[in-house]
Length: 157
Image (cartoon, rainbow, N blue to C red):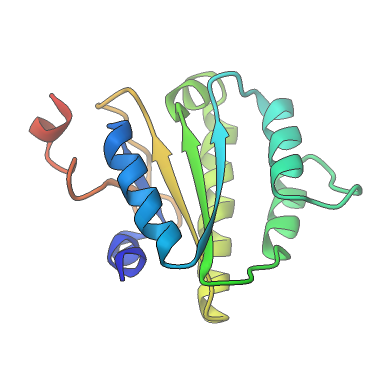
C-alpha cells in the first residue's frame, strides 16, 4: 500500500511538483483516504483556524487555538482507511508565521500516531514551490521530500 510506504519516515511528506503531488493524492485516495485540501498562501493564524474548522467540520465551540485544534483533530471521525491533509503553498504560511506553521504540523503528527493505534491513518502532504524548503524535526522525525523528489537534483537544485 502506497500510504504505508510513504509513512515509513513519518506522517508528513513534502512535495514540490504539482503533478507528483496529484499523482500521489489519487493513489492515496484510491486506498480509501478522504482528502482535505488547504491553500496556505493567504494564511495567518486566524485564517488557518477558520479554514481548518470549516473544512474539517469542527464543532461550533472550536476555540481557534492549537490546543483546540489538537482536541478537535483527535476527535475526527475516520470512516475508511484515513484522512490525507494536503497543504499547498506551505512556504507562505511558514515564512509569515513559522511558530504556528511548525506547531500545527506537530499537532498533526502527534494525532497521526494516535490514530495509527486505532488502525486508522492521518497523513499530510506539504507542497511548496520552494525546492529548498526544509522543516525541522516534528515529533522527533524530520519531514522529508517524497521519493521522487528526495534528491536535490530532482527538485532542480
